[in-house]
Image (cartoon, rainbow, N blue to C red; front, side):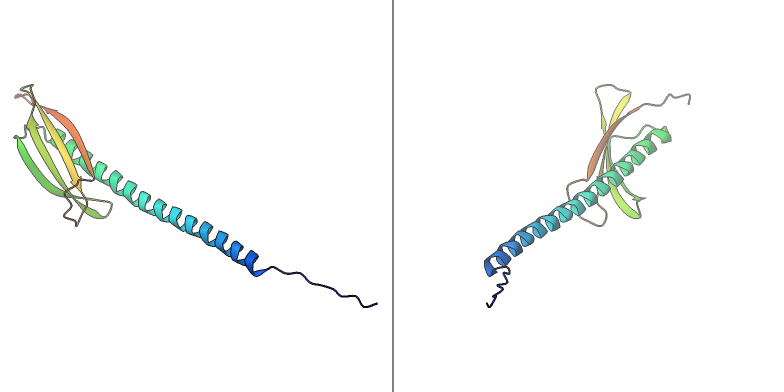
Length: 129
């Protein structure tokens, strides 16, 4: 008797289905890692911009002067980058209280949208201080 051994392998259809599943899952992994990278960069920029805004606001408080109503702008280094900031000082209903809104913008860009805005209040210093 002659024994015929039939070897069975994968069919072309099975290979194509497996490759399709692999390609879809790799695409999802690549998209997820890309989204993570973009989100991480946005959170880093937002955190650094908030620190710059806090530094500017604390600078107003430490100066112990009565800032005039209007806008002041400048730059500050944070995280090895030079950040642009704009402080808007406005009068409140209380005579001895001023509101300061600090907007911080991405460095080296001309974007109109600030990365963060931080508001605070300054009281008028005592004259004898």
